[in-house]
Amino acid sequence: MEMMPVKIVLLGPPGAGKGTQAKSISNRYSIPHISTGDIFRKNISEETPLGIQAKQYIDNGQLVPDEVTINTVKDRLTWEDCKNGYLLDGFPRTVAQAEALQEFLVSRNENLDTALCIEVPSSFILERMTGRRVCGSCGASYHVKFNPTKVEGTCDVCGEHEFFQREDDKPETVKRRLDVNIAQGEPIIAHYREL
Image (tube, rainbow, N blue to C red; front, top):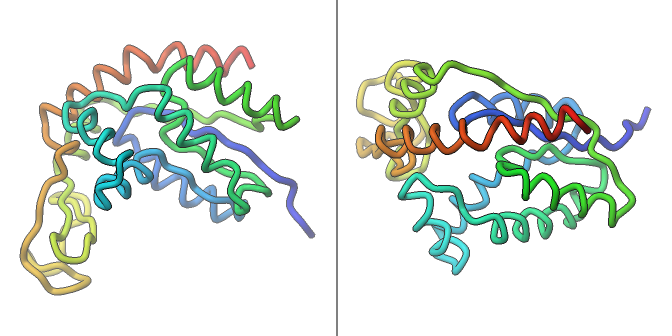
């Protein structure tokens, strides 16, 4: 039996576990998990013009400007793998982005099926994000408390011993990101409640 296309927006603060839930949902519905954070990080690591531009904002705990984010997502939603739906993670983050997404869908005679919001206390998010570490060799991701390496200081995947904390996981950056998200989150949630 063929599944109907499903288009989902996943809302919640950074570090709330959207990525974990998104993987499960995208597997269940066989749709791509589209994370703006992943798109920006890939471009940053490849030092593309988009990556260089995005890095300046992300490193300062700011959101990438709406125009850049909207155009990036709109382009991604035209890819072939999105024809049966998709799950958006990290987009929209502003009312302007939500309205741009709605206009884009209307222009294609499509609808969003649902918006899901994950709510988590800020104290948990701070602990979760600031404890993340990445292997400097293969990029495997760990957490000092919730997902440590099997052998302390040694990557489970490649055996290397060099780990780093992403700039956007440093305490001062996480705090700024949470403050921005709280200020902008409620209007987005209200927008989708109305829809």
